[in-house]
Image 1: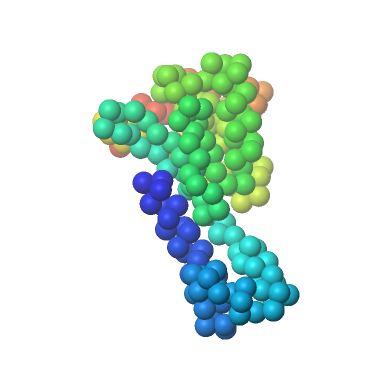
Image 2 (image 1 turned 30 degrees about the horizontal axis):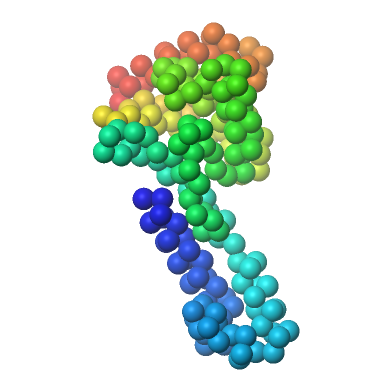
Length: 197
């Protein structure tokens, strides 16, 4: 799936380049690559190349799923690079808040034994703490929903109000650390929301 998403992103970027830059020369990407250097002066050719290089598709996707042996796979996919494999690390983040989320989860991995083998409450509390840490980044808001996916089903959906209550406890009890009250609040929400779901 990650490779398919990557190919689609590359095709979309190519269509944008053809529409915004190469259309006035009546060229496709393939035609420009094959004969562009011979068709233009050196200065014009490198100017077009520079404009093409600046056409970034600012979309990153987090792609995850399970294989036929129920082994989890995790990839970050963009148009600029092949999919990045995060299976070994066991967590990933995308967007402007990704550096803060990675820092929080890396710290949790090193100092709080955060791993893919954690129970649901513990893993969820670490993930929410990383989300809360990332909220100061541009374009990251407090509006959040949570979906847990296991090999058997999708479950554990909770709404913004529930997450806001966890955030309040997390902040009051000395964020960025997780408190026992935070973990208990997550546990209470997980199971009450699952029942309503």
